[in-house]
Amino acid sequence: MTELNKALGKRLALPPIIDTESCLGDLPRTLGPWPEARSEQIASCLASARTHGGWQWPDQPVVFVSDPHADAEGFLRSLIGAGAIRRNQDRITLTQFGQQARIILGGDSLDKGPSNLALLDAIASVIDAGANVQILAGNHDLRMRMAIGAVQGERTVLNEHLFVRMVSTAE
Image (cartoon, rainbow, N blue to C red; front, side, top):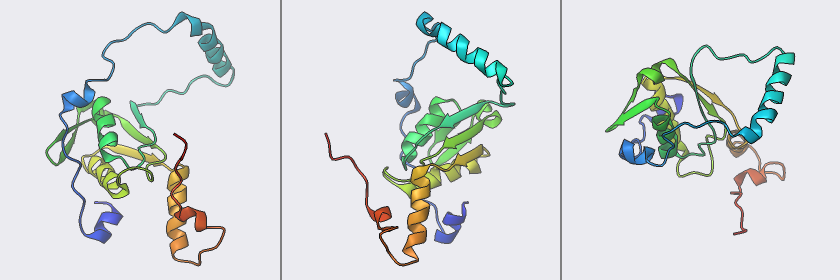
């Protein structure tokens, strides 16, 4: 259980289960050749990488989930789609692939979405299932941290913007 959950003394329920097949229905199921038009650009990029020591491949599979933005359901669907987890009732289990993989959250876990706490609980459930999870901080996460710190002090022009929800009004 995360420190936040210990402090709260409970964990939020995971988002309701959505049938795994329905959440995978719109994902690609076939492989195809790389478009020829880009092959020269890719070859040039690989040649450049070789001059700097080449590629360093990870020693285990990596599942990279970027910008979950407080969307626990989207986060869990991403891991189901990647083949890393299964979800049954309120329980997350790792697949064989998920047991071997490193799951990296690529920043912007917090802010914008339906519930920061629900996402933190979903992440905790994946960790509790035994997953190797690493979380990178993005600008939204840092902004949230700064806002939490600012609550304890005086509001000034330097921190007032942290309490304003930034959304686009152009549609």
